[in-house]
Image (cartoon, rainbow, N blue to C red; front, side):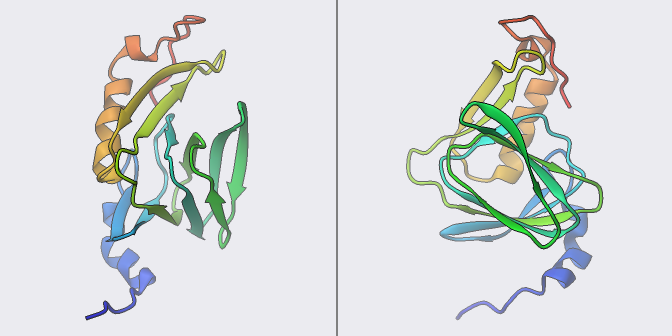
Length: 168
């Protein structure tokens, strides 16, 4: 039997407490696509690299999608009511502000695909640390990687220029 449509506003009223830092996301549907509700504010300095596309829809408030576009750092604002399709393989850091809600849809990863979390040096923009993993559940898998980076000054230290980067 097919499922019934989801009243997203009602779901938020009943489940908004599930959108907790540092990632603030919660998986609503899982099939060929993964549909996540994502709240703000978040506390992340990493850039996620997903081999498949990610679709962003900003339901409430605005967000900022920091990306590395062909080696150039740039910001893509996504305002309330707007949507954006991020191509696969683009390093991105979704910056979510207080009292904002978005929906992110990702494809199930193909067999053998690796997701990566990457941190860049705040001074010289070199990669400071990167960790790869087979994505099963972003909501639970990102947090330990983020905490590992935050808890280890050696991981946050740039090998090129010596800057100790902020954890959050």
